[in-house]
Image (cartoon, rainbow over all chains, first blue to last red; front, top):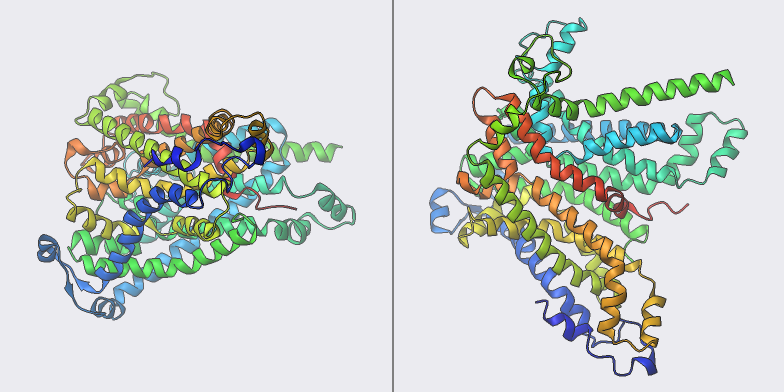
Length: 321
Length: 276
């Protein structure tokens, strides 16, 4: 595929001197850009577009172990969806996923923004230290992060249990955080938020440095309190960044799987089902690939709305030009 | 005056507190990795490895399938980097240096593709690959990662190419270089740093991925490092010292690479989002 490249863009420029065409401009044949795009587009079509189409088809099929062996599903129309929508557990899972996403995203945004504001106020040395810390957290692979947190909340020798007992917050000796789903979700939320804060903090800080100083100073001289300056001047200027960060965060947290899965030893109980886990359990646990695909399709549909907001924002700020 | 000094002290204290809270889990992993057994399982906790030992690290690398996992992760990550770089370079060239019908649509498509929840796609991907007899093979994982990584690599490379001034290219044309010559001598060195940053990004993505590898790779000798780490923790009675040493080893290349390119990649994502 790369052998096409010299032919397309690097044909000897016989008339370069005379016509002064921009390098790699429209100069080649009109088909050059298309030829360049073909390999990437083909891969994306094969491993993204086709499975996407296949998922829609699967969601309308009964596809169990028998069908897996035959590699052929059995058409059932909208039966999978009917089954899901009449299942109380499915709606619980949807509600739980929404609540989990809302908690993670709002906590991430609030703490991330606060840390960004703190970064902007710090001297250069302190700022470097804090940024370095954030980058270390950001760089930590998710699987590694989950293992660390599992160790910190270990019921026997976890440092968190020791600390809470030490601070007289309660007796947390041999406390298993995952027996009660509320505290279990608390731990998972903390893990996700901890991992996501650095990205948001550093992005918002980058945005803050681009807010014109004169504007903020003028408002402060007029006697506006700091939070009002933030709300009326900084926030509106940073709105594009916030829109992008919030939509990305929603998309990431809504489909969180690895954190929940590894945290619970690959055996999450029904209290820990979110849509990604539920789809996985149905497909690979129960071998109901059709039903699993239907759940996954609902996930895609919900996130489509968020994606739309994100893409529109990217188009608006001219990234697409 | 005094008030502003108080404020400075307060802010610095707050910053130190935030730093400590954020970095503690990472510190705890490394510290546990270097601790002796009795220091890991002690009450109260031992806050610093005063008697550092490498025992956990030697245990970790002698665990079954550790080295095959390293090998698989390296093979997968390098293959993904090479393939995605070639494909993304061509596509980015088209998007950055050509004006053509459908360009804008393709760019929107690239952004849209990044938004597809990939965890949701794992079921059809598994079935498609199992039909193609690509389950439990590294090649199946490589192809899948390639698509995960491509949109972003195209996107960032395009950004780097847009940064190359047209004048430079034209100047070299006036000097009578062939277009290919100008391309090799002018464009390539200028987008070099972009290529490095992009390939490191692709490497990190492939190195860290879990769910695709988890679904597609079954036999122990096909495991990647993240699978090795996860299977480690699911066995009964977790050997925390060994696990934390293994986790440190897994994170190390990523952290080093990440720190090298963090600025370039991070700002690529929202560059130009704030324009005053």
